[in-house]
Structures are given as C-alpha cells and as structure tokens.
Length: 430
Ligand code: ATP
Ligand code: AMO
Image (cartoon, rainbow, N blue to C red):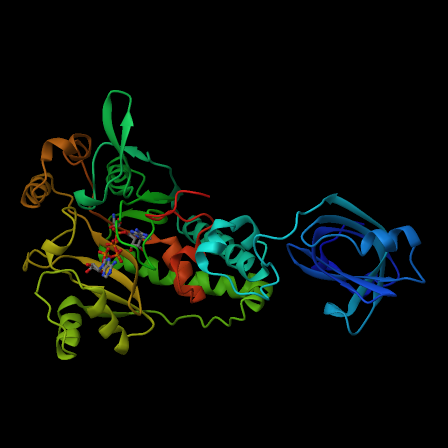
C-alpha cells in the first residue's frame, strides 16, 4: 500500500508498503547499506543487509546517487535505532529519476549556504524539511484566513491587477505597456474594494498579489507581495481592527492545531497572542521615540529607527492608531473634530508593520478635496469617484502583507524566506 513516511506506524509492522521520495542519504557500511528516503512528510530508513536482500538489488542500491527519486517496496520492521522506530527491508527499489552529481546545494544542511545561493537553487532549497515547513504553515494560515472570513459573512473577490492609477503614492509603481496605453501593476486593491462597497457587497476579502517598485533592499520589502485585503460597510476603523486582531489570534491557534509536525521541523513553539492588542496613539509613539533620542517631525511616517526604539517597549502585537492625516493616503477619514489626525491604524509586531487600514472617506466632496490636497488629479480617479456619487455606505478596511505575517509568526530573519520565488531589485529569476 502506498504511504507517506509519516503515516507508517505499529499497525504496519510485518506488512509491505510502497514509498515514493528522494534519496536523502546513502550510508554504505560494507555488509549493510542504509538509504534514508525523504518524502514531503518526513524520513524513512531503508535497510539493506547484504545477506538478506536480493544480491542484484544490494549492488544497485549502494550506487544510487543522493537526491535521486526512488520508489521503494518493502516490509516494515520495528527498529529502535531508526528514525520513528521503524525500518523498511526492501524487496524492490526503482530509480525513477537519477540525480546528477555534485549537487548545487546540500539538502541535508550539513554545509550552511547563503540566502542568495539558496534562492538561486530554490527548487532544491525547498526540499529541506525546515524550508518546506514554512510553506506548509503558510498554507494553513491562508486556510485559517479564508475560514475566518467565510464564517463572518465575507465573500472572496478578485480585482484587476492591471490598473490605470496609483493608490499608495505615485513613486512605487511598475509601468507596463497595455496595447497603445500606459498601465501599471496594482499596488493595492484599494480602489476596487471600496468600489465594491458601493456595489452593496458589504464585506469582501481579497487575497492577491500587489506590486511595488521599492528600490531599496531591505529584509521586509518585496517587489511582489501577497496582500490580504478586507473592506467592510457600516463600520469604522475600530470595527475592522477587531476583525484583524481576532484573525491574527485565530491564525496562531489553527497553526498550533494543524501544524505540529512542521513547527517541530522549525523547532518552534507558538504562543497565541492575547487580544485585544494594545492601541498606542501615534502621538504617544512619537513621544517614546523622542524620549529615546530620535528626532521626529510630527506628521512624518515613523522611521525604522524610531520603530525599533518603540519596539523596545512593545515587542508583541500592537496597533499604532490615529496617524496624522497628511501621513496617510487620501482615502483615510480625518476625525471630524480634529481633522489633522485620521481614523487610521497600523498593526505592528515589534518594529515590523504587518497591516495598515482605516475608516474611509465616503463623502464625494471631501474625497475630491483630499485627492487634490495630496497633489493628485481627481480626473484620474474617474471610475472610483463615480461610485461615491450614488449611494456609498460608510466603510472601513485594511490590507495585511501575508509574507510579513508569516515572517512575524515564524520569526524569519528575512521576508524572502516566506516566499517561494521572491522578487526583489536584483532577483527576477527563478
Ligand atoms: P508600507 O510601505 O506598506 O507603507 P512599510 O512597512 O513598507 O509599509 P514604509 O512606509 O515603506 O513602510 O516604511 C516605513 C518606514 O521605514 C518609513 O519611515 C521609511 O522611510 C522607512 N524605510 C523604508 N525603507 C527603508 C530602508 N530600506 N531602510 C531604512 N528605512 C526604511
Ligand atoms: P500599505 O501600503 O500599508 O496599505 O500596505 C498594506 C500591507 O502590505 C504589506 N506590504 C508589503 N509587504 C512586502 N513588501 C512590500 N513591498 C510591501 N508593501 C506593503 C505590509 C503593509 O502593511 N491600501 C492600503 C491598505 C488599506 O488601507 O486597506 C495599503 O496598501 O504588510
């Protein structure tokens, strides 16, 4: 019977199983050959005592090159010294695809490799259980996000990724040629998810790529990232912050429930964060950084240096709320009684920004004014503005970088670790 290595247990002792996988290691002790087979769920020891197995098979087995793909049929025997307490005495080993030598990268991790070398040989790097684990956990995180929002009455949508305008400030756009016209890769589904509020969907979720022409090379910026976006009608910024903190907590819980093996491969124990997350006002955050010696002009975004100082006091998840209106995009709702600050928030984990969101302006006139005040041309927002003229409900929403969330949950040192094939200034392949 075909099995994954991890599914083999006591009930299989004395029975024959069929395994498919890669040759992780071959140890040749003369009269005894061990092949460590690796599949997507773990390892199995294939043991070939010269005196027991077929002679032809024994001769072939000791020559199989590492990372070749094999099929093994054999009997499961209890063996205390083998990983997981069993070994397979093979009746048959079929090489389905032989690997070349030398290998471009060590899957056994006996030799450490630079991140660049790993990313250059990503297919091979991804074979490492520790690296596989990241993506198995990322899968569960996405599952948890979908389940959470499905339960809360959201519908999942897909909006265009080829667009005609910027939404998050004009400097970080990738222009493309769209027949006779100039177009761009979308920075955020912002305008479309808001437009869907005018369409009456009330609660939407999108999980999709965003593109930003970030020039700098940092451990937290990608040029292509995956963003989890929501937009909700008849609520304010506080309403969507509650979804966000509850969601983050639930993602941790579901990972703990469903990813025991993968957390073990990463040598990680996840502590579920407590909700509600603390709300730190922008003004208070500025004060903390200033007291620690950082010069900050009120109204500016918080620099990485400032955020690192703030994170000395706030190491877990927390919100920075009530940002200066001028530091946030045009669609953010200013407080009525104090319009220089806005109903906005960033979700932080220590110094790392995970998400940002706001209550939105839903009044046409105010929106046009804010677009102009930010030095943008209302004419280029035609389809978007139109949606505000014929019945736009009050609404709020946020966007969360999925890659950043994974970085935060798994404690990864570089965002590229959370992405299969990362795109950065230097990297367009693989
Ligand atoms: P987003 O870009 O989605 O708003 P972010 O976390 O990428 O979120 P930025 O606005 O890009 O945040 O940057 C946050 C702060 O970090 C800003 O003050 C910015 O000047 C600073 N920053 C950005 N890139 C770098 C960099 N490469 N090195 C140091 N500081 C940086
Ligand atoms: P913002 O520009 O803050 O907000 O982006 C939302 C979240 O997306 C992630 N992110 C990135 N991740 C990796 N690499 C990047 N270059 C990158 N840029 C952004 C971050 C960030 O917090 N329209 C608003 C959201 C909203 O208000 O609904 C927006 O795009 O985790």
